[in-house]
Length: 111
Image (cartoon, rainbow, N blue to C red; front, top):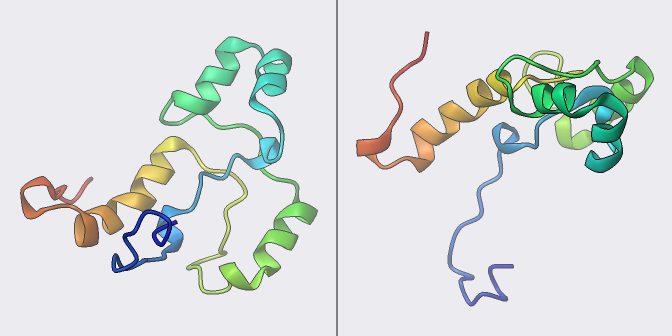
């Protein structure tokens, strides 16, 4: 993408902290179908509330993800079975504060 944009000199940084949110049992399902099946209120709670989340990813599917070499260096158990929005924020904030944010926007340590 950087080559296409003529910005090939911009360094690429990779980190697990910027991975997509783990939606557990909803992984791989379409948003439209999930919203219809769960109803709009529950769907919005899963997607937008700080602490709402769907059921965790089943153990067999989670084991396959955790066996992926791309995730071998993750701390703890590696790929979580499901994440709330609050967990995602806690995962991303250290990377934002340490590497991306200008000093004037750095986030102070949280509770």
